[in-house]
Length: 307
Image 1: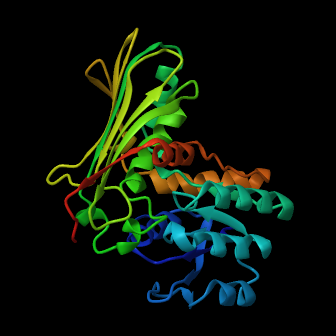
Image 2 (image 1 turned 90 degrees about the horizontal axis):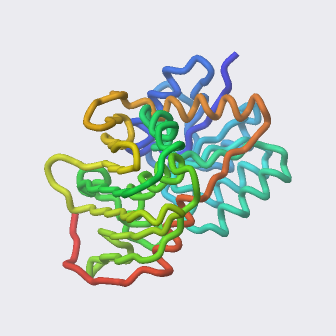
C-alpha cells in the first residue's frame, strides 16, 4: 500500500525532481499539492498549508519544496498536526529553526528528514568507502554554475536567508561531510557579494582536518557554458574524482561509477525506510559550515548582478 504525500511548493525543483520521483515509486502517491499559484493536473490542490492539514487528515507525509525563508512555519504546522515532514535543502534559513523543528518532531513522535539530495548521488557510497581507509593529502571542491540557468528570476535566493551561492554550494558540503571519515572545520572564507545583493555570488573556503591536508572549496554562480560540480581528492594511496555532482567517480583516472540522476528517487526511498523504523534524519553538518562561513568570511564587494 502506497503512502500519501502532499507536495508543498510547485516550482522548478518540484516539477523536475519531486513529482517524477514520486510517480516512479510504487511506495508513494502524490495525494495533494499546496501552492499559491501552481498546481498539478489530476491532483487535489490547496492554496494554504492550513487548508490541507484541515481537510486531508489521511495524508501522513508533507514534503516541503519551498524557499527556506518561509519553510519553518510550514514545517512547524505540519509537525504540530502530527504529520511526518521532508525538508528540501537547505533545511531552514537558520540553525536555530532547524533545531527547533528537530525537537518538535521528537515531541510529536513523527519523522523529520532534512534531505541532502546530493548525498544520494550514485557515486557517493563508493567514494565514502574508498576514502575510509586512506590518508588525505589534498581535497578540492570546485562547484561553479550559472545562476540564470538554475534559478531564473528567483529573487528569494538574493534575499537574507536565501543563502546565495551557498544554495548550490551546500550540496558540495553535504557530500564532503558524508564521505570524509572525520569532522572538519572552517578556518577561512572570502565571500563575494554583488553590490546590489544581500547574499554572496561566490565563495572561497578553507578547512582544517586531522590529516593536515590542504582543503579548499570554491563556489561561483557566474559560470557560463559547461557547469562544474567536481570534488578532487588526493590520498596516500591514489587519487579520486567525483564529478557530475557526485554521480560519477573515477579513481586514478579510471571511471568506476558512472551513475545517473537518481538523487530524489533515493531520497524518497530513504524516507520510506525512516517511516518504517520510526526514525528521523536531521544532520545539520553542511548547514553549520555555511553559518561558519558567514561568521568568519571576509566580505568582498563585486559588480552588481541582474537577471
